[in-house]
Length: 424
Ligand code: AMP
Ligand code: GLY
Image (cartoon, rainbow, N blue to C red; front, side):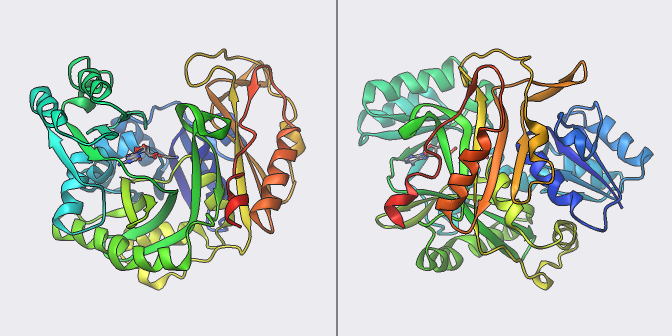
């Protein structure tokens, strides 16, 4: 069969690598893709938001299945456009992708259906938000309602910071219309775990857990980024946590969406915080995490096409998800200066050393092909993933493998997965 993947990051490379393993797949296209994806798929120069062009392309090439990796096109309704054209597509429709597209929607949903999450209020006006902040407890958390590249969350330690935050989000429109409405929520503490799942509208199947490092610098210091590295599984995700989430969070979310007339088909990514009072939902995403996909998918044993199709056809109850009994660590190689400012266009050396290296992957994020060479083309450049029998071994393997790659201004964190030493 012929598959089209929509997106261009490390996550889409990990999806493409999983798809390429399926004996059912003859040809993979990726729009727009990147230099690494180009080694296993044919990249097509169409942007992820160019829905009409993507539909035309899928029709012309007789694509059997389109997989949407990114949040923007999902929230924008790409799945509805494909379905309307009679094309098979994996991902939530617009009315379900709102689970990620509007934090106010997802908070109201959780409240209505008693799904554990932080206390909160939604605000459409800066005046009302400021009045609320006069008598709040600090720290407090401000969130832009809409998509903001994962950066629309402000943790404010004082009233002054929070007032300034309201101004940034709602008046200065730092994240554009995403800040027309904000959520103000209780500050929580505890380890954070990412749990990805497949959903077919009624059934949900949980993948192995993962953990992300969002800050730019070692010791979780520095600015928030798209993610500097991940590991899977998370030692914090114990059997007890799993049992709690299965009872109160996962199926409850799927049932709530169905009850609202918004059946969810695709990936639900649960961002959980394990608080003293038990696990609570920090956020939902309607897609694989990036770079969570880079540690979760290499450990999945199933044919991913079978799973995607079961979701589309409402037959996920027939699928038994299987993951390898090992661990994986992904270290992101970035351009020094990310996430603020950085240079691009430097040749990347050593990529060929990963060819045929069992248990190792180099997933491309910001790369491009120039004059026959692969060059840096973004803040996050590559994700180096390695497996091991346990997290410690996987981490040692991943860091050893980062040495195989060289490019000017290469920057990485040196403590991805290190905190797990304290738990194990
Ligand atoms: P979100 O995009 O909602 O996951 O928020 C991004 C990050 O902000 C999370 O991964 C947490 O580290 C932090 N965060 C979000 N909400 C809260 C909260 N209520 N309390 C503490 N930290 C939070
Ligand atoms: N790694 C977090 C995300 O994909 O949103």
